[in-house]
Image (cartoon, rainbow, N blue to C red; front, side, top):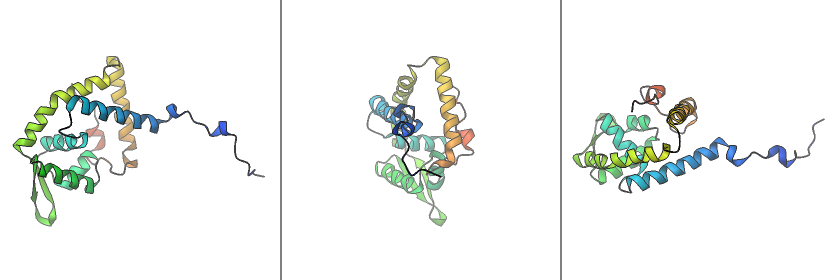
Length: 170
């Protein structure tokens, strides 16, 4: 016969710093803080991702851009409108109300200015780990993100998530 009594508190306790969700949230806080410290506040981390993707794949439409950087379509549209207002991208209306996105010369210049800061940010985030730990950390992080992609509100829809998350040559 099941008991209606609540289990003892110690059975419910999970050490906060053993919870992946908490640690990932903290890692995100740290990454954003270091981004602003090293890159500055001219561009946000998400704007940087959008600009970087448009540099890599010029002419993406807004829906495809959202899929490529794992944003919901309304967020991608808002960011694109802000970037257009800043003069960093242009949005061309295509048939069926799609919008083709292209970097402007100003957008390219913004990206060029961010590159040294992004490199410093990456170094700062990984510098406390040994070289083999850095590779293993990034490998496991890519694997975690790849395997959990479908749980996201805005799953990555690149050529393939595995391809987008594959280790990059440095």
